[in-house]
Length: 187
Image (cartoon, rainbow, N blue to C red; front, side, top):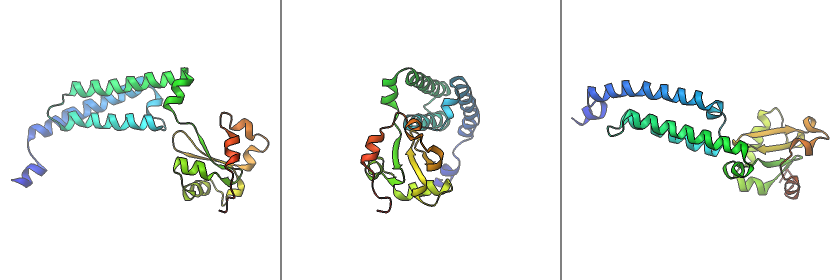
């Protein structure tokens, strides 16, 4: 009897999954189209939280008897609406943008590891070196900047890409703080 309830408990439950899943799937597609590309772009921390919440909400009406399709669609639609409102506000308000988004962090500056920033952002030297190698470089001496972006990607900018333009290319970042943390890349 236990095996029967684990693998199959009723045709009614299977029918609910067959009906509810496509409805929620189509609803998500419609909401993504209405809210724009930002809903599926590379994610910052806030976007990730919303994505996880949407996944959880979608699963609820599919798998739980007490949650209706209408409740699931409304909850998903509301999350997309709130995300759209917040992202619209971040574009229009510097204050909201600073509260919601994390600013980029310089992890390597002119070939030198910025250990205090690495520690603060919890990024290891091996992760940095992996990103450097992925970009076709073997050592930090060839690198002007490695930046931990707001979406958690590591941007690797080689010396030859920014000769004479370093301050212009990273406007908005505190280069004085990056220079203060400069350390020997071989330590």
